[in-house]
Image 1 (cartoon, rainbow, N blue to C red):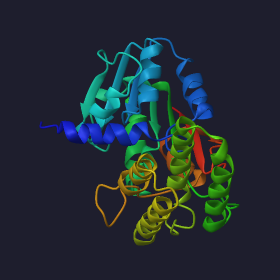
Image 2 (image 1 turned 180 degrees about the vertical axis):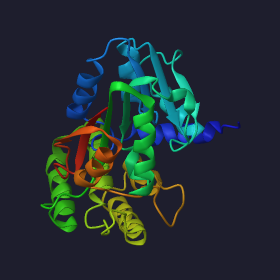
Image 3 (image 1 turned 120 degrees about the horizontal axis):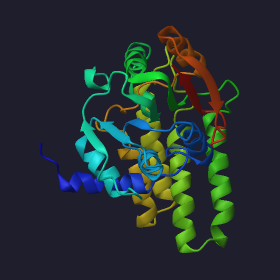
Image 4 (image 1 turned 135 degrees about the vertical axis):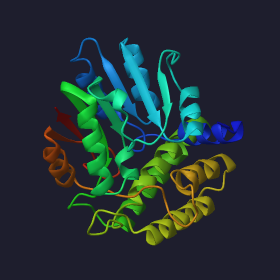
Length: 292
């Protein structure tokens, strides 16, 4: 399997310039950790290669840690961002929706941070939940984060102008290093704010409108903050993150908890919801804990 080192560096640089709500925040990490700590003899499956989650399992000295990621270059990039030694981690390149019979009943903890955004609902969600249920031992848990627009979400333009106002108000007092960090957070918040008003009745995103909004937002930020470092950060978050093709995004569906809950219950899970306070839309990011 050929891996381009340039592509690995490209993905690493994008991910290193992302923060909450794209990457897991403290409240989410606390929930992942709380559930993982409940098990002894931890058998952990991470869907994706989220560095924070793989690091967590390694740090807790899990007996087995498996990471499944369909893009080998993203997997390599995430490993470069690791804070722990991943030499014992089983790195599997492949499709989450492929049934792996060797995984049946093999795990007591499965986690996925934001990966459901990349799957069609209800078909691919249902397929994944079916597989996860089969991979878990009795008493095992599936912990995941998803994004969906809450009923009370303000208009996108209101959210956008408030994010810009807050950043501009703080800007004169910030050092260059602080400015870069604040802008990374701003760009990450804009990446999810772009979803506002873009969800169709079936939970899918309106791709043409979403792409148009992301492109327009990048152009606005580029003109407003022309510093090359800031432009590169904005480009990564808005033009490249989850955009392997120019005309669409790789993010497919933003389904509310009730939709996820119905599919999980159908598989036999017991489920609880955990809304997250992540900016810019508190409750937009939510987590669920599904127990077998």
